[in-house]
Length: 117
Image (cartoon, rainbow, N blue to C red; front, side):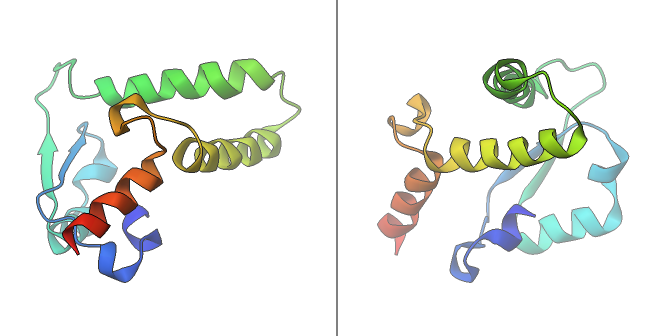
């Protein structure tokens, strides 16, 4: 999904390392072919390797803390889905990230592509 939402000239992710667990969806032929076509390298950790999902678990923790617990209780799934879309937009376009030099991820990525153009 992320590759399709990028501008066509920004879709080159050659060298990107895609980390995932051993879930069936991540090992599917079409999925792996798409990663290969984009130039991404697949990294599927070994069974029982607790470090594989550390970044994802951290992000899920932020999501639960910053959105789910703060704005709940929820009336239904539709409310959670809409709030999640708003949260992802805020997280990527307005939330300041220390690892990105205290700028939003989208701005960091735009700066990167401008620097290599």
